[in-house]
Length: 163
Image (cartoon, rainbow, N blue to C red; front, side):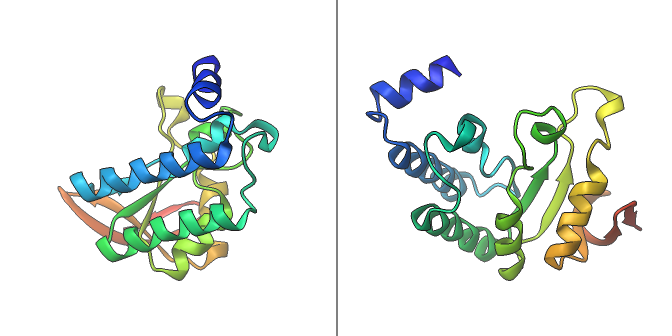
């Protein structure tokens, strides 16, 4: 956190909008350069935004930046990861990405997956049910997973995937 704050102060002159804009520019550059099959931790930048000290997720400019990125994910059919680790470890109050981003992703038919980003076997399904319920509330009916070396979409519910 201290290194992040130092960067905010010294490189971005304490301007949260500048650092957030740069973060999402770098994510977009990564997509355009590497064309990854999955984007994880889409809004990881919020991890450092304790009490909205740098930006508000309600700001119009923030929505525009994120929605532009979601348009790219939809166009390239890149899977958006719903990452539960930050939430179950209590580093953030919401999943990566935030629920409003999940809603916007669904409007664009961005494929999704749920990942615990676990570091220990007992964390494998931490907060899965809650993430699944959020996605179901957004209108998602399928999760994307790799099975037998190929990406496939499967029906799911709060208890798991239906193979």
